[in-house]
Length: 308
Length: 252
Ligand SMILES: Nc1ncnc2c1ncn2[C@@H]1O[C@H](COP(=O)(O)OP(=O)(O)OP(=O)(O)O)[C@@H](O)[C@H]1O
Ligand SMILES: [Mg+2]
Image (cartoon, rainbow over the protein chains, first blue to last red):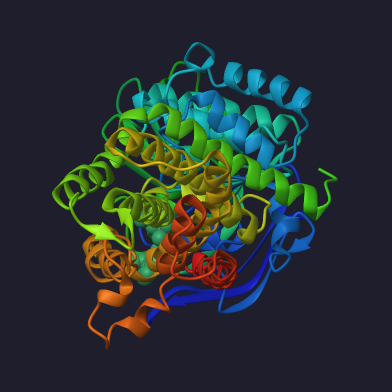
């Protein structure tokens, strides 16, 4: 049922508490995003789940096995670390080849998967170039290919698009979606709001070693209940129009300034269609809505912004 | 994915060895330049002391096995320490998260480094011939187990020290306080019996002493100790250092 289970995990590095009782579950087949600012503990948590680091306390299970069973877990996961982890003195193909061998893939399957992997990440023409000649984006794409050629059940990506240009970032998102569609569970960390919102099915917001909120992206935002609708009128707004708007279900506050009305509501997308039926024809000039984003959620929960 | 642990370990050893070989082939100039220092020792000491008679043989005959041993201790210790580069460039993590046991990874590194050492020692033996060195083909063949065991020992030692020094800054320390003392206390360039008497016992705790002496025994027939004893001592040293190296590898 669950691809990752973490129960009350804590970890400190001589004195510094990096994780303080982290608990969550990742469903099979979803893209799970851990969103948090620098130093939140994302990399530490990833290291524990990928068997590289031992938690001080708590329990973690990945792909059905306790992380104590290192080899069992390692066989079933693919990892892209925050820092590059390629052998730059080897070619792209050799990096993939050695990886596939370490994961016990037979030769024929290896060749096939490597070809496909290179193709998917658009590095086919660079297959036999030494990795030291690669740009940061190419290296990252190669690492993506490497992390999934052995068909892992769970893919761990620690800030997969950190420092990449927009184009490469979109491409990486595309690969992640494709893998999700093929049934791979993805556990990723990020401190980009947009990435968490657009890519992840479930987001856990992490701050200072704790998960402060977890849920589906829409639910998190809805929880905040603060869509803002701006309605622009032809001519001055009338008092009875404001009263009509205040009557609508779910409207919290209506503020007017001259020809514009600002509506604060918990369900903006339901309110907008109603505007046209309750207001006389020809009154509304334009409608604009701003939904809260995960940044607003983070600010609400911690009093700080994610990006510093 | 249904490999047994043994096949999996063998595969990991093979991969690490193959990686070393690919890198070696790509860095030929590094391989060649690593021969330069031993060859200079060989050429300058060999000609400088050519008049000196060593137990009835020429100095070059005495010196060549010593310099072959020198090449092995340098290249193997560096091979062990090179794990620090892998950590720096992140590749160590890729290995750490692979479904293979550490001990197999360590053995693979050692296999790669032993191959490099054999090539280096052979190059030195061949290049010593024009300088006046002579040996028999079976001597060269018999020298291989000694070279391999030395390579195993010193690669394990390099891994061990890599985990202790943690970064490149400690490199000079290992060089000055480990490699050079072992070299000078090994009998590579002069007989251990010429050392101040209080230092002589130290030689018996020095794996390079047994390596060089064994090489000298099989190559020129003039070792101080029976080559079988040298070989046995090296086996013990290599087992100890591989375990120590693999143990410390976990901490990197
Ligand atoms: N090896 C270490 N030794 C000591 N402290 C560490 C170590 N690794 C991480 N920390 C500390 O633990 C905390 C969590 O770090 P971690 O790298 O897990 O955060 P992160 O969310 O991945 O941050 P970033 O976005 O910068 O990658 C930080 O305060 C960090 O300084
Ligand atoms: Mg991190």
